[in-house]
Amino acid sequence: MKEPNDCSNLQEIRVCIDTIDQQIISIFGKRFEYVKAAAKFKTNETSVQAPERFNTMLQQRRQWAKEAGLSPDVIEKVYQDLVSYFIEEELKHWLSK
Image 1: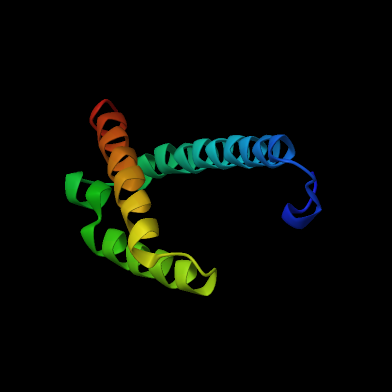
Image 2: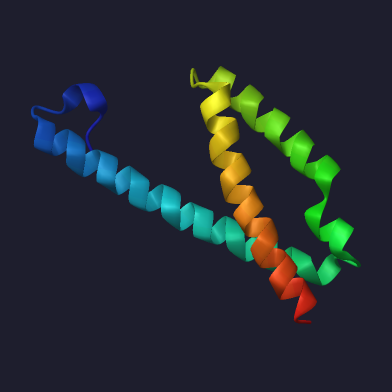
């Protein structure tokens, strides 16, 4: 894959962006596998929801966003939505044990 400044047209840039998005989604899928695996170590619904961990995780992602030159608010929103979905799914998985 070319570096952004090495792309010679919009089509090349779009192909690279699509490739990166596909990789991001694949990595989110891998993350979700770990979330489901974590369910076996949880003892109750509160431990599944882990509100302290959730808040700490969001703050860490905000810091990483700042370090990467991204908007902490946007990254926090992405992770709030993503992790809230994962928690709902983990809770379903945990309750079905």
